Length: 451
Image (cartoon, rainbow, N blue to C red; front, side):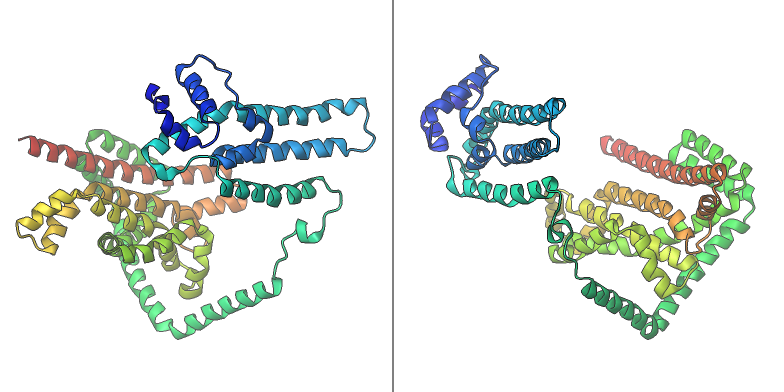
């Protein structure tokens, strides 16, 4: 860092004003000869100096902190019946304001030197004492300070400032139009929704019938064999303890129903998620279209999913599966696209050079190399599907979520905790098995590569 002050011409080009001062200030900071290294301009004008020097982090720190101090100061001096007892409340905002200015002045030179370091690498960062950023800083202070101080310090605030002028009639009109749209779609696309319901109900009922009807020793043995084969004896022991808990506490049948719902939802997510993820990885335009939709699917409150699910598919297990798919599908698509996009370009180029077709490159090069990311997406999809069990139970999906919702309704604290632990154990068993399987495959591939 010692060479940062060696080029005086570079520093003059960066600072434009007071280059000699900043050369000395940077030298003191680099050599650590003076810990107390304040900037007088930052001490006097605070955020405005930071804005002029394009130090926006320091600008917002000073602006918001000083705004708080000014509000406290005005409120302290505008209190009725001021007397000596109120002196500490008046002194505190002044002290806060002074400490904030002192902090800005002490941090100013160090922050400006870091900007100088970035400017030496890339001149587009910008330096000097710039007028337009200063005007932006002044405009922000004029826009924020008066209204905020008025709102917090005035005893009677105008309704236009205190409450956002909402367009209630327009909101009711839009809500009515959305309701009419749902009603129209329910009638016009009834056959389509009935077909989806029939397919999902058929798959779900068959999986549920197999899991519930199969004798529990057989189901438990198969689960333990899968755990041992894919993840080893430690995960097998954990799976045994978890299955014993589900059986001994009376959650076996409902656990199997829950797993049927999760398996159905995950299968649908895999069916649509993998192709869509591959499509997004191959086309930036498709990615630009799908990703905002996926973000909405991930951030929309889970209870909102139930509105279209109930409107189009009534109540029961089918809308529970639909809501679960909407919530759990995004990670499958995003992580599949991310894994394929992260495949090294030279490997794909080598496959092309050897005459590989697009399909061969996809299935023999990109998908195998993207497998860790795809498996992570599958894992996240399963975990998110299990997290929707309780929400889906509110619309008649049944399973372990039904016990949790019943415990909430009747304040059965103990039963609710036991049912919640059963859901957690199901999730942990699946997670450990998948992680163990992925770890073993990775280790096997590493050994094959070494040989």
